Amino acid sequence: MSKPTIAIIGPGNIGRDLVIKLCRSPNLSILGLIGRNYGTSSEEFAARSNVPYYGSGISEYLEYHANTNIFIDATTAECHAYHCSSLEHCNAYLIDLTPSGMGIIYSPIASPSLPIRGTSISLVSCGGQASLPLLASLGKYFSHLEYIEIVSSMASLAVGPATRSNIDEYIITTQNAINKLVSPDGVKVMLNINPANPPVTMKTTINLVGDTDYSLEELTSVARKVEASVREYCPGYSINIPPLFMSDGRLVTMVQIQGAGDYLPTYAGNIDIINSACVKLCEEIAYSCMI
Image (cartoon, rainbow, N blue to C red; front, side, top):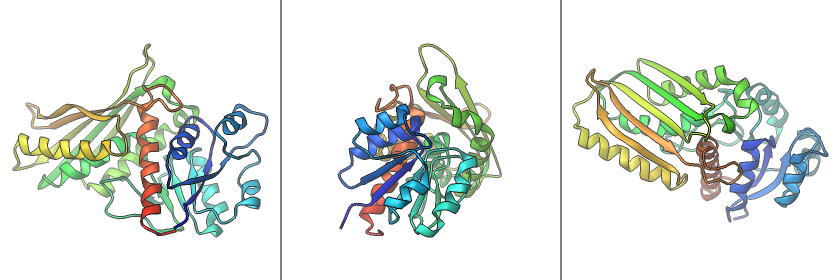
């Protein structure tokens, strides 16, 4: 089977980190990094990475590679609708790393199956990818989930302008994904962009309120299995506060994501978790022979 061909739209921090990660995979082939201008640091980065750069946008890229298998959108929620429209005729996989909320929700472990070709595939958000595997797995052990709350904290230096301009979309899209995949009665998502120096490592605190007949030991065992599974595609993912019951009955756990240091330093776990999920999805598409 030939390698799936991939184009990355958006040469910012997320797109550059993704180039480095994808180049390590023996099962995938990057055909281009798509930007909006020539003569920039993005073009220089692409040249150093031995990846062709297309500085006049999607239309220029499609002149050379109309049959690309996978497009990855690492731009903004506002731009994603335009990219969906521009690529609709390609019948390709379109993986959405923006919090646009469009398309089929996907998170490794949490999603029951691979999305189909020709649709937008939402990877939700970094906070969503950090929490959904645990929420989906632990949620099965609750007969009724009254409320879920997640709070993600990440370093200011790891949060680019696109994410900052899409904070409302980030929160809404993450809440909608939790509602879709876990189905609690209520959900709340919060994001803390921390300006501390030295920069903090990404952490996500997860709260579940509901009815469960399972012991803390059993729930902890479930969480540790999820941790091991996520670490297979994102090695920096770890549970730094194991599940525990608070005095008010909440089940609380916290995960930390140490970045691989591919493009930004290791504090940028927010980029690592969503990009690692993206690489896993691309490789699952390759392995499934769906191209």
